[in-house]
Length: 428
Image 1 (spheres, rainbow, N blue to C red):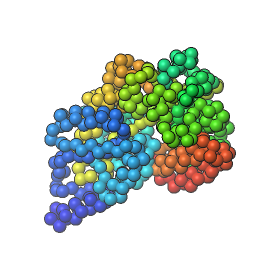
Image 2 (cartoon, rainbow, N blue to C red):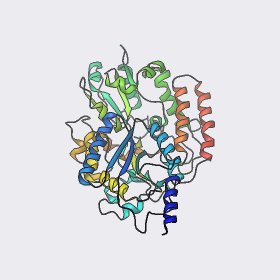
Image 3 (tube, rainbow, N blue to C red):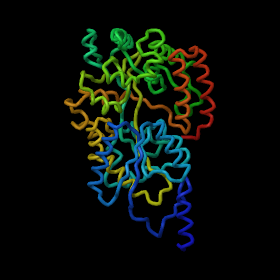
Image 4 (cartoon, rainbow, N blue to C red):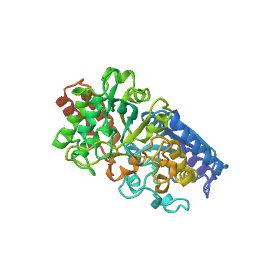
């Protein structure tokens, strides 16, 4: 390779979204350090710092810069900007509902070939459900998922006891759920905290026998209004706020989030994935635990997959350092570090079934609930525009949930606004 071509190749690598295949010489460059970008609050990030510390001890020759942001929205903005500027991170953690736009643009280095040749980890080590969510083309892995979480009910056991309400158990019904929420509401407390979003609504739609979209493989529209079973679930969900008043009203939710209210002991139940655990472990004034979602009348148990994966940016001069970090993070030591922090339901099967995750001395005592939900998990569509569909739908669903717009009108607008986004989908 001539000096002129080396300079040209190096320049291209800094400005192109997807690499040209050039290297700095006839063989790949030696590892020089990597940057890892991910999201989370302070308690979550503490677990990742432990992970990085463990990796650094085992790999002193490969410095890692951990660069966290506070939320998934901030992460998306940062990734979009960094890819556009030609300076993406080596590794980034992304939810399966959001990685599609980057995969469709060829911005992610597919992980399948690296996993196939790895001597440290194997595909059979991990949950097939988590892996399948990151097969953008339906066949090969794009990213490697660290967790297999589900939406569950976090509940304040002390408030249940004080109200004389039985604590929730597997198979409890929508009626049981609503009755508990009503009994826990009053005297400055509310029975339930829930975000009016597609990921929170979806399990209720599925439990009732409805569908979110017309075709899971090639969706062209949301069916929340047209599908009778889905519409019944939407009405039941919205009525929690507008009819029954068991959810904090708009103004109160804006002044104090459901998580903050739960931490303060003034919220009976709170819907979230495993991501809430590190923060909730700071609670000292009451006992809390987790339970599965309630089941629709005549319906089936259902929950929504929550999974984040380590992805490698395409176009790096050398992917070996990034893959070394992912191998460690997905190995037993890396998965155990995050499991012990409370952050994840490990995708690695042996760690998920170990004391690192199931230890009943660390709340929640009923962590088995997350594993028991696995057969009932469903995923949202994996398309290039799904994150945009979800963002637009969440905005309008919030308007309906808090009564800012008429229910029928709002659902019709929701359907109309997202339909063009489905048309923009770039294959699977």
